[in-house]
Image (tube, rainbow, N blue to C red; front, side, top):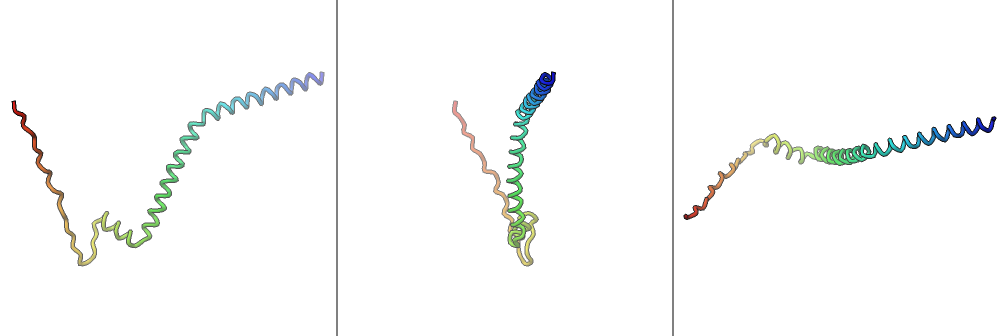
Length: 100
């Protein structure tokens, strides 16, 4: 009687472990695309972070700050003149005339 009870309990534990293993395997295979998506997103953000660190280092350089202010805001130094060169007008297009 005791042996049958031990076999029944052992069978129940094997069944529970087996179903748990199957369920976890299915969950793992379903989450693999999610993992790859997160991994690529992490790499993208890591690259962005490196660019931001480089940008922050550049802003600490006074020459880079001056260049940024001049280019983006159009600021000039005292006693300095700006020369504005307009864009050239579009060149006329020549269309060939086909004889009939």
